[in-house]
Image 1 (cartoon, rainbow, N blue to C red):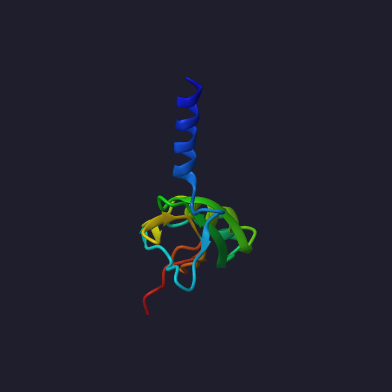
Image 2 (image 1 turned 90 degrees about the vertical axis):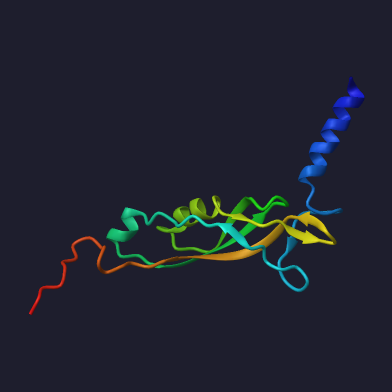
Length: 130
């Protein structure tokens, strides 16, 4: 039945719609950042660890109305760390953001910090007792 198919398609589209007239809203002003309910730590790439690369990767994430990360893009890159940051953030989950009582998608900036721990870096030796 074509009418039933159209109704089902419209219902699927409505579930994906983040707000009337457009895409996700940007966090700021009256729109609060959603609360993280699941954060997965990035896996430190061995190549970056061996090269002693550390720092902050800044990302822009689109969080859908259900609180799942839909899209991630790099705003500040550290080439050896970018993919690990993206892979981690894609697994994060948030509480849905409400606008006028309805869940909406949001665009937000997030950071992923990579710090070398001197005790776990390759070729480091434990301190010797005096």
